[in-house]
Amino acid sequence: MPATEKDSQPGLFRPAWTLAQRELIRFFRQRSRVIGAFGQPLLFWILFGAGLKNSFQAPDWSQMLGRPLSYQEYFFPGVAVMIVLFTAIFSTISIIEDRKEGFLQGVLVSPVSRLAIVLGKLTGGMCLSLIQAGIFLALAPLMGIQANLLQWSAIFGFLALLAFTLTALGFVMAWPLDSTQGYHALMIMLLMPMWLLSGAFFPGGESGWLSWLMRLNPLTYGVAALRRLLYWDYPLPVSAGLPSMGVSLLVTVIFASTCIGLSVALVSRQSERNVR
Image (cartoon, helix red, strand yellow):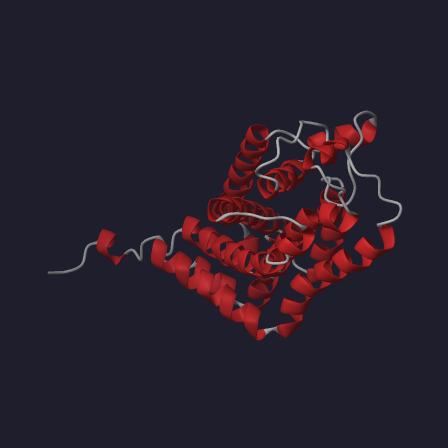
């Protein structure tokens, strides 16, 4: 019996997982990417933690911990988010390389759905982010942060959502570009300020223009949610730099949906860029 058009479609899961596997293999074959995505945030954590520990003024919510909060401990969730962000950058910059090599054009003319292409890229970036962030989070007991199995499950579940979101954001940035230099320029102008103004590097004030920028920054809610999950047993108060868990999850989900929707729309759009 001849195969129908429906039977000839490759489906969604298999193409997406194949593209995700390609990202994983490609990443671990390039040692410079491993070092750049994991080594640089780790170096920042060590150097900034040592250099700013004497000038750091702990936020008011740290009083709920019942012990002094060092700068390295405060900076710890921010570095985990930075690792996820850097991994998203390195995994999506390959879109530009794939277009130059002709691989992307081959995928676009195949019967694979556009959603599968997007999910493959995003899943690969998410898996890489979880691996590297998980290695770093293993240092949590050294900071006095203790977590049970349920708590770790929630932490990694949220990190998966955040990694998916940031990889989708990188996808939206990389797709229209033709050069890696342009991508790095956008990274310096957009992604790094997003991280710096997320409460990851320094506590946010309760008033003034800086606190409003932090409130408008979607990454603020990602850092805040991870911080609250790490301090699961402590009733941390709501502040400008530390939104509630419910609000943080809601904003992150909305931001993720927006970035994924834009990614699919860009891939589905008929343009000369998709065939060059």
